[in-house]
Each structure stands twice: as C-alpha cells, then as structure tokens.
Image (cartoon, rainbow, N blue to C red; front, side, top):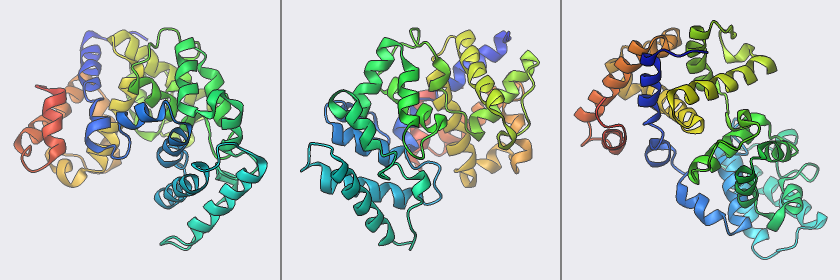
Amino acid sequence: MKLTKAYSDSIRLLTRVAPMYWDACAGFRKKKQFYDARTNWVTSLKLFLHCYAFQRSVFISQYAEAAKKAVEELLYVNTTITKGLINKVAQRNDKIVSEGKKRIKVNQSHNPLAPNGSVLSLCNEIPHKNLLAWTLDSLHRGNIQEVADGLCSVRGIGYKIAAFWIRDVAEAFNVSLKKLEEPSYSQPIDVWVYRFIRAVARTARTNLPRDLAFYTKKSYWAAAELMIEAADQAGVRHTALNQAVWYYSSEWISEWSDFGAAELDIEGEIKWDKLFSTPRALQANLKKVGDFCKTHKKEYSWAASWGKVVGRT
C-alpha cells in the first residue's frame, strides 16, 4: 500500500488525538492504573476484568463490577490460587451478578471467572501471577503471540479483546513496537477501526467487506496488517493510531452525536465512509471538531482537552 502525502499528513493529525483516549472519555482506563497494577497481581487482575474482559457482554457494567468485587473480597486474603479458591471466586461472582440491579444470570460460556477456563488459572501459570507485568515483559521481548494465545485460553476472551489489552499496555508504557514478531495481535479491529481502514484500503485496491459484521478471519487480519502499514508509512505508532481512530469515531462522532452531529453534518451510518474517504474529508472533519471544541471549551472539559492535545487543525 502506498499512501499519498496528503493521507500520511491526515493520519499523523488524527493520531494526535490518541492521548485523549486516556484523559478525556475513557473514564476508568487511566495510565496510573496500569502503573499501579505492574507490581500488584490482584490490582492487575481487577484492571483486566473491570475494563476489558466483559467488552463483548450486553451487561458490561454489571458483570465487570461483580467480577471486581468478587476478586477484592477473596483474593486480597488468599494469595495462593487453588482449585477451591477458583470455585469460590466463581460462585461469589455469580451471586453478586444475580443480586445486581438487573436480575440476570452469568453466561458461563463467556465468563472469564468460570472454573473451567478461569483467568485465575492463567494467573497461576505466569510469573508472579501478574497479567500486566507478564504482558509488558513479553512485549519487551517481542513475544506478543504468547500473550494473545494465553489470554485467549480464558473463557470468553478472543483475539480482539486480547489485542485491546495488549494495545493499551503497549501505549501506557510506550513500549517499542519494532521488536514485535506478530504486531497484528496488538490491533483490535472493531467496527470503528474497520470503517477507517476500509476507507484507507481503497488506496491500495484492497477488497474488504463493506461491514465488519461480514468479515472473515482473513479480512480481519488483513485489516490489522493494513492499520500497521498505514501507521508505518505515516511515521506514527500503530497502537496509538488504533486508539485515536476508536476514540474519534466511537466517542466523539458516535457517543457525542448530540454535540457534534449537527456541526459535522453527519446523519446516520451511511455517511460514515465520508469521514475517512479522502485526506481532505478527514482533515476537514477534524477541523470541524477542533472548531467545535474551541467554541465549547468552557462548557465541556473534553472540548478543552481536545485543544490542548490536538492543537490547531
């Protein structure tokens, strides 16, 4: 794939949005949490369960809070992971979920605390039981597939969620990406990232399905590889570009549509491709976002953050 200078400039501009992923809207994902988790395996486990493990669930908040509470209650006083402890944590988690605001039961087939395929079993197999320290050490050694395969051995965790975790660990600690043997494992491809890279892929005459709902494993990994290639040509970190695309698309354009849609002339998903279809379109929309934030920086903290991080567009 050969990007034009205009497209490379646009990607560099978009990547400047990446720090806002941590500071503006990601809420419970803060770099400090990653730093604290590096030396405490229970804190690391809580971070993974609360912020990542249940992303595919409909009731994300209730499941994540229950898992976090179960871990806090039982693991701070039990430092040795046994089969009995794994069962106790699973039972306590199930009980907390069932007593939540929404009367639901845990979907055991996707439950990372289920006795068969528990994340605690993985913790027992890695150094010091610490998921974050293990991930960070593996990234420094370039052995990213070890982490991806290990996480995917946990019930309910697939390569997209594994990549989500790997990407954020890499960015939180500014890990060098040059040594990664299989960098695609650090690229979570969700619908937002897919729409972006599909637009970019047209410049390389690469055929990807119109929507991520119809993707195959081949097109999923092709999208991941194209993200890395686009970032490399633009001279930016591919993990940072992934964060920036997700933040800009899902949090600004989609979730904040009440604020931004009218300003950006966006009406429904049919116009999504136009956000990224050409370098000019991407730069124009980033400028509109910048102008909107400049006007509303006293009303919304995230608007002020945009100006500080992205600067003039």
